[in-house]
Length: 350
Image (tube, one colour):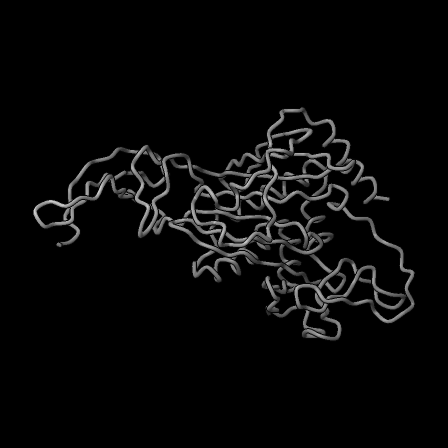
């Protein structure tokens, strides 16, 4: 009854949200990375303007020292409510310039995210799933998903399965609920979350502990050494917004979404990619396996000090030399625009 009541609470709160009418439905997470050849084509930029939300709400979530604005979009599609969430923690502006097409394209003028997370559409009814009755007396129901064998909820009469997850009863590391390991899927890396990581997060009432571990897997694939604290904060803010709307606590997400009936958990990472200074990846977790969250962030190379970018205004020949007119843009460590200067340089000879 508690879960049914919570689900009703989510629906009631969402349907009472004010109508603002922003079209923001993200493209499928299964899109080919070859589509993302320019900044304007990065995953977060794919929207379907034909779908308009029935409501949009915004709230500020405080994570550590960050006050993060979370937008929540609700869509009605064929009579079912879908949710989408978005955070944009910081943007920086590239002023007008003449972008060079090759050999390495420069992004056009505009506002770009330093960090951004946007989710796919997801049925509201699946945010808080009720427990299914155990009706099967057959062997444990299993199936293959992304090339990995899964056990299927609700299990059978002897073993209850909270949500569908890789088969670590018989196939993958049986009994190793506190081990760290990965399962290579066809399109996804499936990461096992040790039971101790989840239990420690419960004790400390800390979502970020789990998220940091999950994000670290994706950043390792992108050859980025440290989990980015802003990305972790953004993901924590999205989860906190969901829990706030449903009047639920952190323990609910850890216990009912992340943790399996065995006490451990699972995450799924795919679609890692990079272009220019931008990196992105997709991730989902636990019972929300089919709800992709796209993380986009800027690799600034340094966390402090003045940052500079050089744009090519034009390339030309002069007295046997290949010359460029360049504009150097300056930003402070918080990505605020400081100014620019012009220079002419020789880049080669004919």
